[in-house]
Length: 132
Image 1 (cartoon, helix red, strand yellow):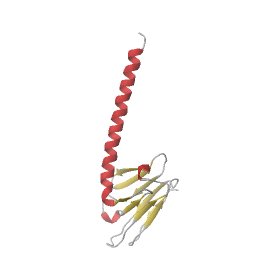
Image 2 (cartoon, helix red, strand yellow):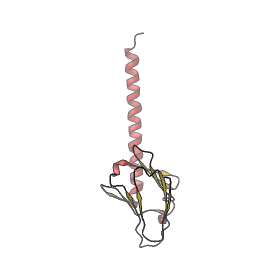
Image 3 (cartoon, one colour):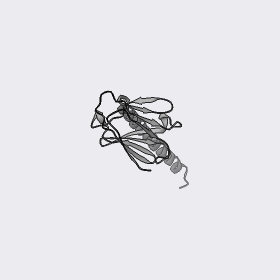
Image 4 (tube, helix red, strand yellow):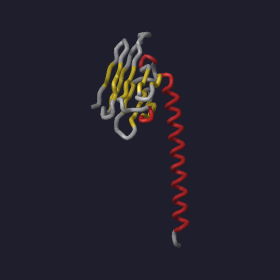
């Protein structure tokens, strides 16, 4: 379902699996000793996730599904961040998230440019081979 998960002042672990829908984490931990985590399902690897920024929220969408996890206020306050995002193959620290978003934006732009270039070339080939 579509759920809102509210954190506490202490360490929280949120579990997100394929099929969970659109969930939102609202984290408000100002306690310096708290270590919050999102634990993604055992079958989910980092490559299965797409990281995006939407306003001040972090969005993590799962490829090939409609599932998405939002962390409200991620970019407006460190207290709203989850310290670790745990996938099957690795953990992502909060400090790595902006770099992942930037890398994915560059990869998507390169992919879109390659696709557009390829489509233009294929269209040119079709026009060149059409009888006039």
